[in-house]
Image (cartoon, rainbow, N blue to C red; front, top):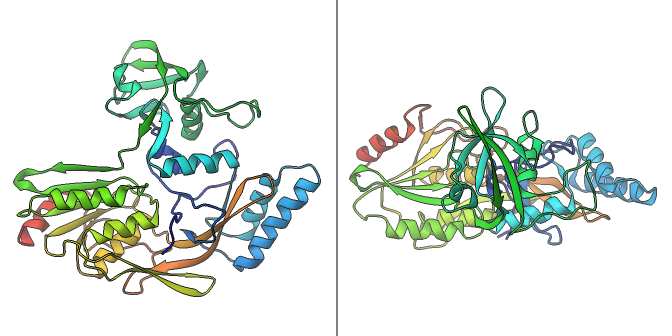
Length: 396
């Protein structure tokens, strides 16, 4: 089974907004998560589709990077151009620094102040969530506060990904290329507004965890397990949550907005609900492989899985396994439809190119890429309540 597989949001090639959705939540300043594969290992990752053959495409990208480096130009930009021209829908190139941040994110830790940001309906940057116990929480910052400036730089009109970089203290493109990223213990000054009140707050960055698996209880003892992303250790947390859940009640597995993560963690999560057996198949350059759950999972307790258009990649792999194996009733709306295998490779300047080499399928042979997964019960509103109703009908 592949060890560190990639299920990440598509990355387009503008340098200013280069960070993908993986930074949005894993770095605690946005919404969703992906993952990144070790480019020095020849194991597959997953994400989009390609018109070129994998070998030819990889050679084109490597040649473009090498030629640019020989001419004193940017290998990264040349590789980006080659990937863009190839037609590989999800193909992407990441700088060495971006790759390192992906690696950090996959470990379920990050350096930051503990707030999530989004653009509101008026185009302003709004604090959407504050992590309990974080520097932002201790300073009294609340969801709904508007973020006006970071270290004196106005954030209105800037991509949220740029705001993430400012909060983290990362050197942005177009600025000092030799600047070192800020670490834990460094300070950042935020300009904020709440209603008519404006103020500034100096926060000290800290090492924080992502809390990608959370557990809550509903009336009647129903356990809700929400997986925001499949980062390192999340599968074991899901297993522990299932073991600790009330034996007399059902479980709701909430995968809404989960844009993926480590495939191994998704398979471990599947093992919490299956007694071994097939989770998914995938091909790499035409060679078929299979992913299997570990035996001993809970196969009897009523289970409902919640999905939406933000459920993608590794989260779709898990959903497909539970649905095809008859283990869960899937409630919500059609998932995103992203399930292609990619293999990353290191370029001459240390940047990383990820290129499509195959696709994965659910146990019944359903190809997810471009189609997504259709829920058993479609629901756009009051989804949680619908799930409770379904559980009651399952003998919960």
